[in-house]
Picture: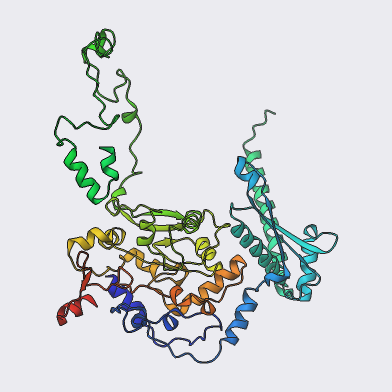
Amino acid sequence: MAARVLRGLCRARPALLPARTPPGIVHRAAAGAAPSSEFRSEYALDRLYLEQARSDPAEGSQDGTKQTSPDIPMDCLSISYCRSSGPGGQNVNKVNSKAEVRFHLASADWIAEDVRQKIAVMHKNKINKSGELIINSEVSRYQMKNLADCLQKIRNMIKEATQKSSVVSKENSQLLIARVQKMNRERLRQKKIHSTIKQSRRVDFD
Amino acid sequence: MAAASRGGGPKAMELLRALPRVSLVNLRPNPGAKKSEKRRGRGRHGGKKSGRGHKGQRQRGNRPRLGFEGGQTPFYLIIPKYGYNEGHSYRRQYHPLSLQKLQYLIDLGRVDPTQPIDLTQLTNARGVTIQPLKRDYGVQLVEMGVDIFSAKVNIEVQMASELAIAAIEKNGGVVTTGFYDPRSLEILCKPIPFFLRGQPIPKRMLPPEDLVRYYTDARNRGYLADPSKIPEARLELAKKYGYVLPDISKDELFQMLSTRKDPRQIFFGLAPGWVVNMSEKKILKPTDERLLRYYSS
């Protein structure tokens, strides 16, 4: 069963988009390829995944990935860890798990200029006197996870700042106004009907 | 007799000649080895009421069954049934191995980081104790101690969380997750009793349906995952957790770090079908074509 599934997964795939691996990253199958003295079964990785022809870059795709998920250069950030707040007894008193990330916003070249200004406006409460944007995180009990959370917050900030507010076209804006007016008219009409019903139920002894 | 244990060859022989013959008269157990049992009804401390108390059901041996609460609906009947443990014997269990414990074992020298770390190495180091008969399917890497972990290892576990994988790769190591069916797991954890049986090493079975997806995913560093997807997954983790991915191909231990087992192999360096003779220190390999075809399928 598992064998059939595996074969289906692997053989059904012809040579896909050839991707050249970025330099310096190792290829397990190629580099640690089983020498002839090692045991190789039918399910050895190089038999399961037929070697695809590797052609030239991926430089294009690398740039693509850079734009979609901005790569935060770690040397531009200054990271520090301190003790978290909240309950936890001796462990919370001793263990440094709150991560703080700072970087000078105005001189951050890896963010576009207009995005930088937008962030300065949106998150002006997080920027100190010397112009450094400060982000904290103490979500988890591990420094690494808190650091990852800080980085994710930075990415979210950049994403929010890059979003352009949608401009409603003239016809659409008029439509929207008309809709609101109609809703109000209908509501008042229903209210008057309800009022007449209640009045008709009133008994006047006169 | 104390002196006899120290003597060398000829001295021991002389002593033996001089000392009296060993017999029941001369033998005695070590002090404290034999503790006499408590016998009731024999004298001052075991006697009189013989530990049974004063009158009543207690003394007369008529106490009701375990769980009886004097007529009140007992606890084990008043609590409604719910399937908390239903099917518990079919659930796979993975013994947790924290990175802190792994670092501890490496620091004490019980586990050798210059060789690929396997469940066998962990069991030999007594770092984990796996009971394959209790539905244990192996070991899972847990994040405790992720901030202090600083060892470069090639480790193979059965499950690993994302943060644990990130911590190991940050230090330049390599993680793989592999599946072992219960028979292979028992052989892996206790290799010597298996070799003494004289059976050929069986081939490792493939994972069941619900685990195939886990082990073919590069994000879990599955042993059946596409090797070309693994570098991307490593990069992704490096970006997420904010560390520079070290280049292991430039490492001196690169050969060791990239060794990996074949999906059908249980031990490094031993193939399925081989018989290991411990007493004569020999390995017997099959030569019949049908057997070879079976064991490499």
